[in-house]
Length: 69
Image 1 (cartoon, one colour):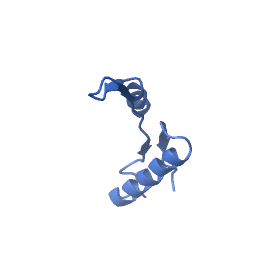
Image 2 (cartoon, helix red, strand yellow; image 1 turned 90 degrees about the horizontal axis):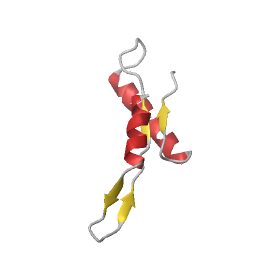
Image 3 (tube, helix red, strand yellow; image 1 turned 90 degrees about the vertical axis):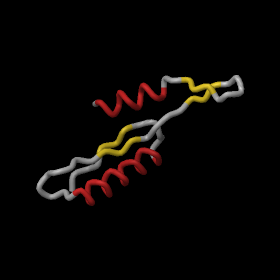
Image 4 (cartoon, one colour; image 1 turned 180 degrees about the vertical axis):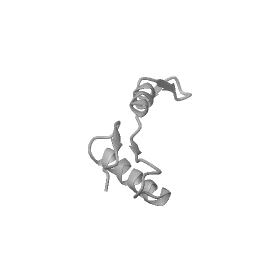
């Protein structure tokens, strides 16, 4: 999955903090399909947002795909 590759690339970077140390950054990503018969753009955004919070609540640094409703 392309999103997981992006997540992995970000987590492998060491970002200089300007004070001689480095920051390790991770991301949580929520994704949802758009354009299917039963999903409007508004619903897709809501579903992706729910998936994002699920990713944060279940360990962070992961990609969660919204469940089809």
